[in-house]
Amino acid sequence: MADTRPARRVVYLVACAAPPAQAVGDLVRLLQEQGWTVCVIATPRAFDWLEAAALADQTGYPVRHEYKRPSDPDSLPLANSVAVAPATFNTINKWTAGISDTFALGILNEAIGLKLPIVVAPYAKPSLAAHPAFERSLEILDGWGVKVLPNEVIRVKPAKNEFEWRPVVAALA
Ligand SMILES: Cc1cc2nc3c(=O)[nH]c(=O)nc-3n(C[C@H](O)[C@H](O)[C@H](O)COP(=O)(O)O)c2cc1C
Image 1 (tube, rainbow, N blue to C red):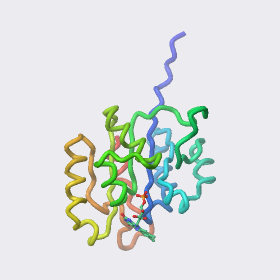
Image 2: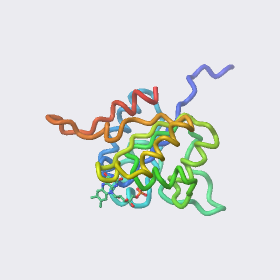
Image 3: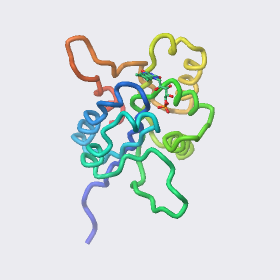
Image 4: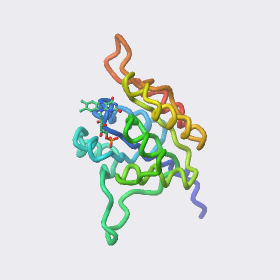
């Protein structure tokens, strides 16, 4: 009998080492409510800031932050989409230079090559956002077809006590 279940939509949620990474579980919940299967991938520094065990419980997948050994099996399903939230100055600039020295960057570089839909939520304070490399990197990402959200659009709004994740969810839809 034909399988009539809807295909699973898998998003790799790449979290870099900026303060919203500590609350990325809230974004996971919102994405799951929209039917996404979420796999969290952290940069090595962000991994130190996350509640990795709680996120693994929440998603059903380990939080990956380093490359596996060649003989290890793949632990994540294939992705349909990628979201980078928060995306640091550091990772954005390395990504556009094609550097793959973290597992997260390897995933991001492959996602470009595979032409997967990608949403990026940059999060850099004004002094870093004013650096010419940052603006150039965001233009490069835009030229590669990546959906680039405004810098710090996910920042906590006055009178709210949580990060503003909805633009990321909407951009993935
Ligand atoms: C408390 C703290 C807050 C930081 N906030 C930011 C930030 O908002 N945006 C940013 O681009 N970097 C921020 N950084 C710097 C990054 O963590 C640093 O550049 C790091 O190397 C980024 O690594 P990653 O891109 O591999 O995650 C912060 C660092 C610390 C210690």
